[in-house]
Image 1: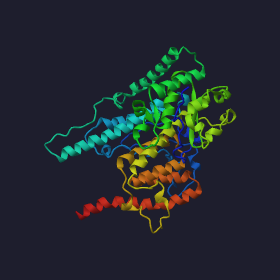
Image 2: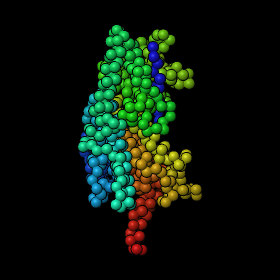
Image 3: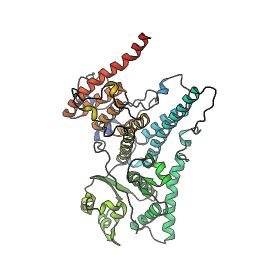
Image 4: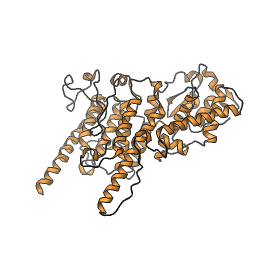
Length: 454
């Protein structure tokens, strides 16, 4: 019997709880949007009951409070009508729209395709990076007038045909189908039945022996955090390996469920007889086969689980699982964006504004890698669609906008956060938001001052 290594992962961002029950009410209708001024807004029942502060004192009966993030991910060129058209901009809009529809609260959770949702995420991020490459090529061509600069961007006419590591979205979905057929062939070749244990053994052989899937020990490579890259390279984060496992078993009509437990995310086959999961055969329980070493490690809380305690775990929904993958992306891209600012945290600027060592005002905002920061913001926007009332997530989203020097948007997001945050957290945010108001005014004055001087 083969062991499935690396299917447990650390909960990467502990401040991102699963979506509250209010989310389902607020997102019954996922609206369409314009990417040029991208904003998710809807009428949230009960919004009049949120705590008010000086930044959210509008008449809620007359004005609806938008609690979904301002999505400023569209490159700046979209706001400039003189900029040349680029199909990547259209893909950005279509990919976000398809992601939003896929995880819409109008659909039943079991109808959500983990694979499709995460491939749409990859397509949007790839289109954004492709747009940046194309823009760089155009700038270089303008600087070298009379010379031709070769662009590395690939031509495609729709999101469905957009190449992700050489394959379109439907081809990556077909790759999961192909893995499933290999599992079926393994069952036939071994002349075994369809007992739960036997099916899982066949899945393990195909994924971890024939295909060579393995867990990335450290979350530093973006290729390990996007589904198409994991299917291409065989190396991925633990949560994405779990998603591959879930998707393959789903095609075999075998339901795999999962749950956060301590610092781990555990998966197991849905069964009416949980005792069989912990029955030791050939020195290993079925639960251990699926989840790997963390079940045997005495340092892990998972080693204490039994059939009785397993029944008490909260089963993660498909939306929860997508949220974990998005939290991975936020953590990854923030780490890459702040690489030159060792130890910088999203909440670092929230220390008292009268701190004499305050280095986070105006022009002293740390310089971060803009593309990685934007990718982190985009992942945060998607996660806020799933968890609009998660005040800690919204705070972190607002702080990323601050680091991106989008002070107006940061003020708005942090002001909404203050309406939902605990009182003590709101008190920490209020003086910082006041300072952001001043920074926003200062940034709006500078262009006019430059004009007058010139």
